[in-house]
Length: 299
Image 1 (tube, rainbow, N blue to C red):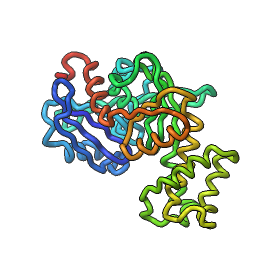
Image 2: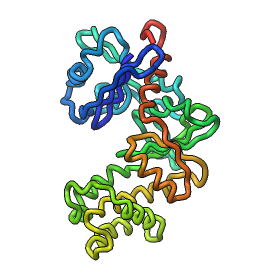
Image 3: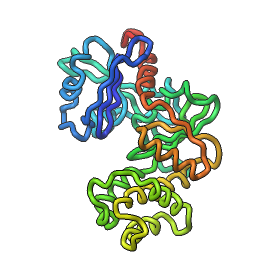
Image 4: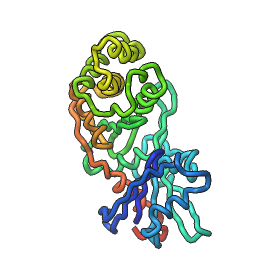
Protein backbone atom coordinates (compact mmCIF):
# COMPACT_ATOMS: atom_id res chain seq x y z
CA UNK A 1 0.00 0.00 0.00
CA UNK A 2 0.92 3.67 -0.15
CA UNK A 3 0.83 5.68 3.08
CA UNK A 4 0.67 9.48 2.73
CA UNK A 5 1.21 12.00 5.51
CA UNK A 6 -0.02 15.22 3.85
CA UNK A 7 0.32 18.29 6.01
CA UNK A 8 0.21 22.06 5.70
CA UNK A 9 3.71 22.52 4.30
CA UNK A 10 4.91 19.11 3.13
CA UNK A 11 3.90 15.72 1.76
CA UNK A 12 5.58 12.54 2.99
CA UNK A 13 4.82 9.24 1.28
CA UNK A 14 5.81 5.64 1.97
CA UNK A 15 5.49 2.53 -0.15
CA UNK A 16 4.82 -0.39 2.19
CA UNK A 17 4.91 -4.13 1.68
CA UNK A 18 2.26 -6.55 2.87
CA UNK A 19 3.72 -6.60 6.38
CA UNK A 20 3.82 -2.80 6.68
CA UNK A 21 7.59 -2.49 6.17
CA UNK A 22 8.83 0.66 4.41
CA UNK A 23 10.22 -0.19 0.97
CA UNK A 24 10.57 3.36 -0.36
CA UNK A 25 9.85 6.88 0.77
CA UNK A 26 9.45 10.33 -0.76
CA UNK A 27 9.06 13.84 0.62
CA UNK A 28 8.24 17.11 -1.13
CA UNK A 29 7.36 20.70 -0.10
CA UNK A 30 3.89 20.11 -1.55
CA UNK A 31 1.74 20.75 1.51
CA UNK A 32 -1.93 21.59 1.15
CA UNK A 33 -1.29 25.34 1.32
CA UNK A 34 0.77 25.11 -1.89
CA UNK A 35 -1.98 23.33 -3.86
CA UNK A 36 -4.44 25.29 -5.98
CA UNK A 37 -8.14 24.64 -5.50
CA UNK A 38 -9.09 21.35 -7.11
CA UNK A 39 -5.45 20.40 -7.70
CA UNK A 40 -4.89 17.68 -5.12
CA UNK A 41 -5.25 14.74 -7.50
CA UNK A 42 -2.82 16.35 -9.93
CA UNK A 43 -0.23 16.93 -7.20
CA UNK A 44 -0.58 13.38 -5.88
CA UNK A 45 -0.13 11.96 -9.39
CA UNK A 46 2.89 14.20 -9.98
CA UNK A 47 4.57 13.05 -6.76
CA UNK A 48 3.59 9.38 -6.74
CA UNK A 49 2.29 8.54 -10.20
CA UNK A 50 4.85 5.81 -10.87
CA UNK A 51 3.87 4.14 -7.56
CA UNK A 52 0.12 4.22 -8.15
CA UNK A 53 -1.48 1.12 -9.67
CA UNK A 54 -4.09 -0.94 -7.85
CA UNK A 55 -2.28 -0.33 -4.57
CA UNK A 56 -4.52 1.12 -1.83
CA UNK A 57 -3.66 4.67 -0.77
CA UNK A 58 -4.41 5.84 2.77
CA UNK A 59 -3.77 9.47 3.73
CA UNK A 60 -3.76 11.46 6.96
CA UNK A 61 -3.07 15.01 8.04
CA UNK A 62 -4.39 18.34 6.84
CA UNK A 63 -5.42 16.74 3.56
CA UNK A 64 -8.63 15.87 5.44
CA UNK A 65 -9.20 19.43 6.70
CA UNK A 66 -11.54 22.14 5.43
CA UNK A 67 -8.64 23.47 3.34
CA UNK A 68 -7.74 19.99 2.05
CA UNK A 69 -8.99 17.60 -0.58
CA UNK A 70 -12.02 16.41 1.38
CA UNK A 71 -13.13 17.60 4.81
CA UNK A 72 -13.43 14.46 6.92
CA UNK A 73 -15.33 14.81 10.23
CA UNK A 74 -13.23 14.39 13.36
CA UNK A 75 -13.47 11.23 15.43
CA UNK A 76 -14.00 11.95 19.12
CA UNK A 77 -11.77 11.03 22.04
CA UNK A 78 -11.25 8.57 23.55
CA UNK A 79 -10.19 6.77 20.39
CA UNK A 80 -7.77 4.10 19.25
CA UNK A 81 -7.06 2.63 15.83
CA UNK A 82 -10.48 0.99 15.43
CA UNK A 83 -12.42 4.17 16.26
CA UNK A 84 -10.24 6.30 13.98
CA UNK A 85 -10.49 3.76 11.14
CA UNK A 86 -14.30 3.94 11.30
CA UNK A 87 -13.99 7.58 10.27
CA UNK A 88 -11.98 6.89 7.09
CA UNK A 89 -13.62 8.42 4.00
CA UNK A 90 -13.03 7.38 0.37
CA UNK A 91 -11.83 9.78 -2.31
CA UNK A 92 -11.91 9.04 -6.05
CA UNK A 93 -10.31 10.75 -9.04
CA UNK A 94 -9.26 10.12 -12.63
CA UNK A 95 -12.86 9.39 -13.65
CA UNK A 96 -13.21 6.90 -10.81
CA UNK A 97 -10.18 4.84 -11.83
CA UNK A 98 -8.16 5.97 -8.78
CA UNK A 99 -9.30 5.59 -5.19
CA UNK A 100 -7.88 6.41 -1.79
CA UNK A 101 -8.90 6.93 1.82
CA UNK A 102 -8.48 9.93 4.12
CA UNK A 103 -8.26 9.61 7.92
CA UNK A 104 -10.53 11.72 10.13
CA UNK A 105 -8.31 13.34 12.76
CA UNK A 106 -9.45 13.68 16.38
CA UNK A 107 -11.31 16.14 18.60
CA UNK A 108 -11.71 16.57 22.34
CA UNK A 109 -12.79 19.22 24.84
CA UNK A 110 -10.84 20.50 27.81
CA UNK A 111 -12.14 20.86 31.37
CA UNK A 112 -13.74 24.20 30.45
CA UNK A 113 -15.49 22.70 27.44
CA UNK A 114 -13.26 24.37 24.84
CA UNK A 115 -12.70 22.14 21.77
CA UNK A 116 -9.30 21.05 20.52
CA UNK A 117 -8.40 19.19 17.32
CA UNK A 118 -5.57 17.35 15.61
CA UNK A 119 -5.05 15.97 12.12
CA UNK A 120 -2.20 13.58 11.43
CA UNK A 121 -0.73 13.33 14.92
CA UNK A 122 -3.28 10.69 15.88
CA UNK A 123 -1.98 8.46 13.08
CA UNK A 124 1.60 8.89 14.27
CA UNK A 125 0.56 7.93 17.80
CA UNK A 126 -1.30 4.75 16.89
CA UNK A 127 1.69 3.81 14.73
CA UNK A 128 3.92 4.09 17.80
CA UNK A 129 1.73 1.87 19.97
CA UNK A 130 4.31 -0.95 20.03
CA UNK A 131 6.82 1.44 21.60
CA UNK A 132 4.45 2.85 24.22
CA UNK A 133 4.10 1.36 27.69
CA UNK A 134 1.03 -0.57 28.78
CA UNK A 135 -1.41 1.54 30.75
CA UNK A 136 -0.83 5.30 30.67
CA UNK A 137 1.64 7.54 28.84
CA UNK A 138 2.20 11.18 27.97
CA UNK A 139 3.16 11.93 24.37
CA UNK A 140 4.41 15.24 22.99
CA UNK A 141 4.52 15.97 19.26
CA UNK A 142 6.40 19.29 18.95
CA UNK A 143 5.84 21.43 15.90
CA UNK A 144 4.02 24.47 14.57
CA UNK A 145 1.13 23.42 16.79
CA UNK A 146 2.57 21.15 19.48
CA UNK A 147 0.31 18.41 20.81
CA UNK A 148 0.38 17.04 24.37
CA UNK A 149 -1.46 13.75 24.45
CA UNK A 150 -2.80 11.55 27.24
CA UNK A 151 -2.70 7.87 26.23
CA UNK A 152 -4.41 5.13 28.20
CA UNK A 153 -4.91 1.44 27.42
CA UNK A 154 -4.34 1.79 23.68
CA UNK A 155 -6.43 4.92 23.14
CA UNK A 156 -5.94 8.68 22.99
CA UNK A 157 -8.12 9.97 25.82
CA UNK A 158 -7.37 13.72 25.66
CA UNK A 159 -4.88 16.24 24.30
CA UNK A 160 -3.95 19.92 24.36
CA UNK A 161 -2.45 22.07 21.62
CA UNK A 162 0.18 24.79 22.08
CA UNK A 163 0.79 27.17 19.14
CA UNK A 164 4.45 27.52 20.09
CA UNK A 165 6.03 27.13 16.66
CA UNK A 166 3.58 29.45 14.96
CA UNK A 167 3.90 32.10 17.68
CA UNK A 168 7.69 31.94 17.32
CA UNK A 169 7.43 32.51 13.56
CA UNK A 170 4.94 35.38 13.93
CA UNK A 171 6.95 37.14 16.64
CA UNK A 172 10.18 36.80 14.71
CA UNK A 173 8.81 38.03 11.38
CA UNK A 174 6.00 40.41 12.30
CA UNK A 175 6.75 41.97 15.69
CA UNK A 176 9.17 44.38 17.33
CA UNK A 177 11.04 41.38 18.73
CA UNK A 178 12.23 40.44 15.29
CA UNK A 179 13.78 43.82 14.48
CA UNK A 180 17.08 42.83 16.06
CA UNK A 181 17.06 39.36 14.51
CA UNK A 182 18.67 39.16 11.09
CA UNK A 183 17.10 36.93 8.47
CA UNK A 184 19.07 33.71 8.36
CA UNK A 185 20.14 33.78 12.03
CA UNK A 186 19.00 30.18 12.46
CA UNK A 187 22.13 28.68 13.96
CA UNK A 188 21.19 27.35 17.36
CA UNK A 189 22.90 28.99 20.33
CA UNK A 190 22.82 26.51 23.22
CA UNK A 191 23.60 29.06 25.93
CA UNK A 192 20.89 31.47 24.74
CA UNK A 193 18.33 28.66 24.52
CA UNK A 194 19.15 27.60 28.08
CA UNK A 195 18.87 31.22 29.24
CA UNK A 196 15.40 31.39 27.69
CA UNK A 197 14.36 28.19 29.46
CA UNK A 198 15.54 29.60 32.79
CA UNK A 199 13.70 32.85 32.19
CA UNK A 200 10.47 30.91 31.60
CA UNK A 201 10.77 29.50 35.13
CA UNK A 202 10.87 32.96 36.72
CA UNK A 203 8.03 35.21 37.81
CA UNK A 204 6.49 37.74 35.47
CA UNK A 205 4.56 35.65 32.96
CA UNK A 206 4.97 34.95 29.27
CA UNK A 207 3.97 38.39 27.96
CA UNK A 208 6.53 40.14 30.14
CA UNK A 209 9.22 37.57 29.37
CA UNK A 210 8.68 37.98 25.63
CA UNK A 211 9.54 41.67 25.71
CA UNK A 212 12.79 40.74 27.39
CA UNK A 213 13.81 39.10 24.12
CA UNK A 214 14.07 42.65 22.77
CA UNK A 215 15.57 44.41 25.76
CA UNK A 216 18.23 41.77 26.38
CA UNK A 217 19.31 42.33 22.81
CA UNK A 218 19.25 46.12 23.15
CA UNK A 219 21.44 46.00 26.26
CA UNK A 220 23.78 43.34 24.94
CA UNK A 221 22.80 40.65 27.45
CA UNK A 222 22.15 38.31 24.53
CA UNK A 223 23.96 38.63 21.20
CA UNK A 224 21.68 39.56 18.31
CA UNK A 225 22.45 36.37 16.40
CA UNK A 226 21.51 34.37 19.53
CA UNK A 227 18.14 36.09 20.08
CA UNK A 228 16.12 33.53 18.06
CA UNK A 229 17.45 30.76 20.33
CA UNK A 230 16.63 32.81 23.41
CA UNK A 231 13.08 33.47 22.18
CA UNK A 232 12.67 29.78 21.38
CA UNK A 233 13.78 28.88 24.91
CA UNK A 234 11.29 31.28 26.48
CA UNK A 235 8.36 29.93 24.43
CA UNK A 236 9.21 26.22 24.79
CA UNK A 237 9.94 26.73 28.48
CA UNK A 238 6.51 28.22 29.07
CA UNK A 239 4.85 25.47 27.03
CA UNK A 240 6.50 22.75 29.09
CA UNK A 241 5.76 24.49 32.38
CA UNK A 242 2.08 24.61 31.44
CA UNK A 243 1.59 21.19 29.84
CA UNK A 244 4.29 18.71 30.88
CA UNK A 245 3.39 16.19 33.61
CA UNK A 246 4.93 16.69 37.05
CA UNK A 247 6.63 13.29 36.85
CA UNK A 248 7.15 10.33 34.55
CA UNK A 249 8.41 9.95 30.99
CA UNK A 250 7.37 12.15 28.07
CA UNK A 251 7.44 10.28 24.74
CA UNK A 252 8.51 12.55 21.86
CA UNK A 253 7.57 12.18 18.19
CA UNK A 254 8.73 14.63 15.55
CA UNK A 255 11.56 16.08 13.49
CA UNK A 256 14.91 15.19 15.09
CA UNK A 257 16.14 18.78 15.55
CA UNK A 258 12.93 19.90 17.24
CA UNK A 259 12.69 16.76 19.35
CA UNK A 260 16.24 17.43 20.57
CA UNK A 261 15.21 20.92 21.76
CA UNK A 262 12.22 19.54 23.64
CA UNK A 263 14.29 16.77 25.17
CA UNK A 264 16.73 19.36 26.48
CA UNK A 265 13.93 21.59 27.73
CA UNK A 266 12.20 18.69 29.48
CA UNK A 267 15.44 17.71 31.19
CA UNK A 268 15.88 21.30 32.42
CA UNK A 269 12.34 21.09 33.80
CA UNK A 270 13.13 17.85 35.63
CA UNK A 271 11.34 15.49 33.22
CA UNK A 272 12.63 12.40 31.47
CA UNK A 273 12.00 12.01 27.74
CA UNK A 274 12.13 9.18 25.22
CA UNK A 275 12.25 9.66 21.46
CA UNK A 276 10.04 7.52 19.23
CA UNK A 277 10.48 6.77 15.52
CA UNK A 278 9.36 9.72 13.40
CA UNK A 279 8.28 7.28 10.63
CA UNK A 280 5.60 5.82 12.91
CA UNK A 281 2.98 7.57 10.75
CA UNK A 282 3.58 4.91 8.08
CA UNK A 283 2.81 2.14 10.58
CA UNK A 284 -0.25 4.04 11.76
CA UNK A 285 -1.64 4.34 8.24
CA UNK A 286 -0.94 0.64 7.63
CA UNK A 287 -2.87 -0.16 10.81
CA UNK A 288 -5.81 2.00 9.70
CA UNK A 289 -5.85 0.27 6.33
CA UNK A 290 -6.05 -3.11 8.06
CA UNK A 291 -9.39 -2.05 9.57
CA UNK A 292 -11.00 -1.32 6.19
CA UNK A 293 -13.73 -3.77 5.09
CA UNK A 294 -12.59 -6.88 3.24
CA UNK A 295 -12.40 -6.16 -0.47
CA UNK A 296 -11.64 -2.46 -0.04
CA UNK A 297 -7.91 -3.09 0.16
CA UNK A 298 -5.56 -6.01 -0.21
CA UNK A 299 -3.64 -5.15 2.98
